[in-house]
Image 1 (cartoon, one colour):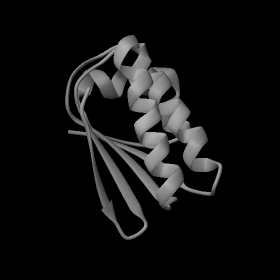
Image 2 (cartoon, one colour):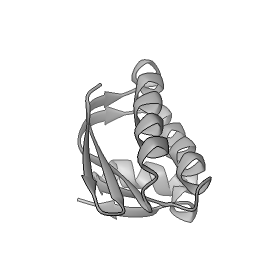
Image 3 (cartoon, helix red, strand yellow):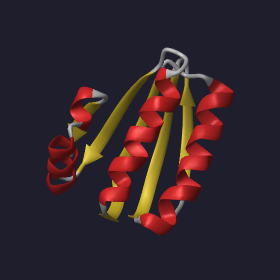
Image 4 (spheres, one colour):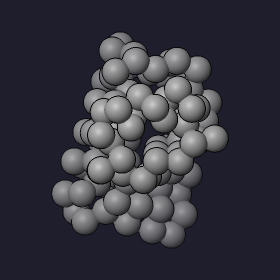
Length: 103
């Protein structure tokens, strides 16, 4: 599961691609947390625009990154969600933790 990072002043974007399932979520969590802890952005943005499949592991991925970024006062944004992915996130209550933006 590839992830590319783009750093801007006060913002770190993690562009995800491919599939997010149980097997891919662990390595993604580690890479994103490592970058977020090292750079301490005010905003961590998870870009789901190139994600072709996701299961409930993606919800857990987002929830865990909220805990990571909020530990040092940052905020979380989840962008470029497909309508189905946005619905899954809303049903889980993620919108209470992060800003959600559909495609």
